[in-house]
Length: 345
Image (cartoon, rainbow, N blue to C red; front, side, top):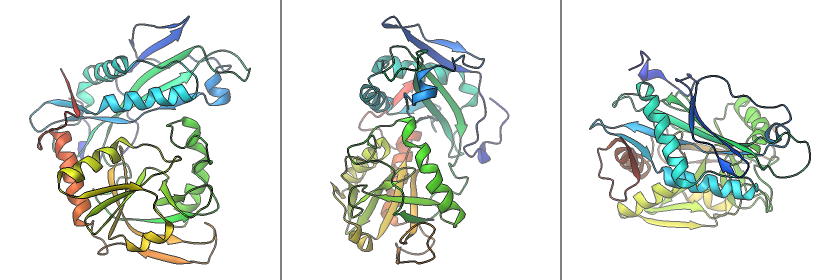
């Protein structure tokens, strides 16, 4: 076991023994291999010039019973394949994806945090186009890499700590009929500028509306949106929202616990009716939102409205129950009745 401060990992990169790599050339993938040094990449590679790249994020946990579990890697594999198909580039099979993730965990097992620290090994599989060309064409060569870090809280804050959010009215996360529902590297860099403005103003999260009309809730910049009202779990139905595996899992957990689930269009005006609002994604599972501020523009001094959810400073009771149940499944303290966890042996 590595001598790390497991209680204060944050989301800082701590390099492990290396990465697992496979390269696609001449119509086939190479045998996955362990590599400890830097990846060699031509400056002419398509990914560096035209952002032909997609990625995933998933976690491995050391359970209370000592068993090592990867949470729903089959879902991540299928989502990566879907992203790659949109980019018209080669993709690893579902089986190859899962085995490379498992092999990475086995190789770096001493970097996997012990149970009891609310920490995990965050896995980052990345697929990039590596052809040496400057033509505007899809890649026929690719590199698939699985890397990871021992990780605690994404923001460094205590679990289920409420944060403040602001609506982004003058910046969009995605275009209508664009790439918002795919996990492409190119989707993230354009949101950094708006995030930096929001952070400078003291907000931790950024909520995007639908890019076409700005009348419906889409998602937060870091993860999906869901709200609770009248015992119902509500999350937006939108073609420009990334299909979050955490959100999908929370919906099922909500049903299992007896709550109603609605995936539908969520009008902006409905914000005032929610008792609890959260951002949800792999890195945090659930980030409860205390307030959402609306302004004509991010830099505007005018505040149009402030929505407040639940009791100040306290994560909502239903959201807290959903979080604890899902984390229990990941840690092996709650029965995995849906077979979501892949056991690493």
